[in-house]
Amino acid sequence: MESDIVNTLVENARRMKMCWLPIALCSVLTCAEGYSQVSRQWLSFWAGPRSMHEWPRSVGLDAQGNPVVIGVGGFSEGMLAVLLKFDPAGGLLRETPVSIAGYGAPRPLGTTYLSDGSSAFVGNATPWPGGDGSDRMLVVKFDSNGEVEWRWVHEAQGNEWHSQGEAIGVDSSGNLYAGGRIVDQEGPGAHHAVDAFLVKLGPTGQMLWRARFDGRDRLSDSIRRIVVDSDQGCLYTVGTAGVEGDPPGFNRTNDILILKYDLNGNLLWSRQWNGP
Image (cartoon, rainbow, N blue to C red; front, top):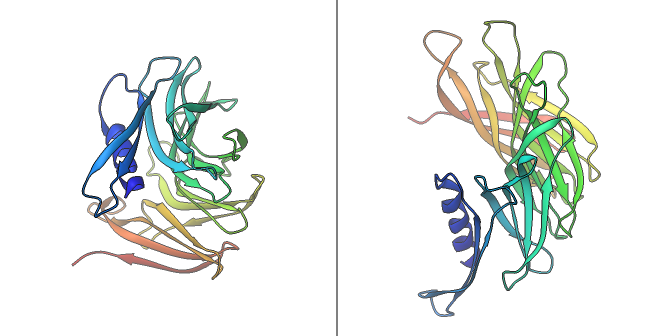
């Protein structure tokens, strides 16, 4: 109940449209009988050194029960991803901005909190300076103290142009699975091919394998969420698959797309669902 309330507060704050927004974290105490009353224990605000549009992506707990927030804040370099760790009384314990040489505006979209108190996010970073307007999938792993342990940025192969990360999961061995979409540049004025994209990263950030999935109508496909079943040696992803429209070659609607892979990157099955 308490974590649901805190997550609702964080999500509502993220959706607010303001030119300057500090990240707010609230601790609540619920009564024992039926959760019929809620009282606030403390409220803590955080704003980056450079007043910009801060926003949180998620909140979790480390092994000691300290709240950990992953989001974006304003720093001298511009907008950066940031990890904030608070003590149980609302005091700020750690502020860890994330910058990447050769890239600007790293931003988290999916997060996961591991049982050992460490955490990770997947998102995007933009090549800068001299970029071509595309993004690259980015994965950042933090240790249990909130320090950056490693960073991984997708390196384009062949015609690959743009990649975006949105979903992340972890198995019992500490391997991370990051999913999203990848875009091929087919040439000037040509329609881009957009596939669902999945990578497996080892505990130290090395890429173990990567997989692409092109849906039934070969249009715009993506992965939005990942669930890992370590006991069964498989994972499931859910996302969207573009459906052929009129004129042909451009998607007008989306199906729900579910994929099942084993943990070695082999596709076991795929399903597309469209409502009645």
